[in-house]
Image 1 (cartoon, rainbow, N blue to C red):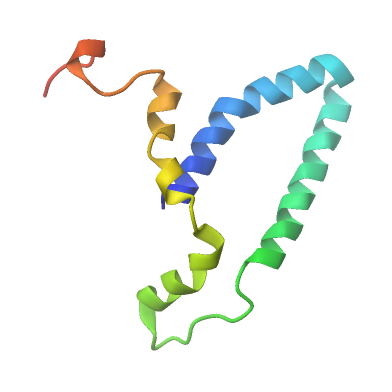
Image 2 (cartoon, rainbow, N blue to C red):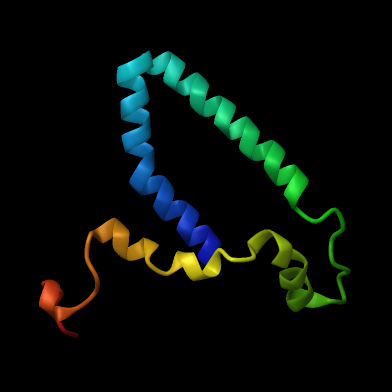
Length: 100
């Protein structure tokens, strides 16, 4: 879950900047070709990194999570700050957030 949130937040933060910069540099059509190539590379990497075998139906959700462990090692500890980076602040009353 943290890996998905990190990817979504990073995409929101960096996507507009990267797309705008590439569009200014290369034009909008070439920018889209660059991102299509990156999407293809991501699909190829995903097909190589995901486990080849599915967990058996009787093993349940814990077995599915255990099968994904090699793909997710080390990312969870980096995921926590991303949602607050999108806001540019941390959730505290000293930075203007109202108390409940």
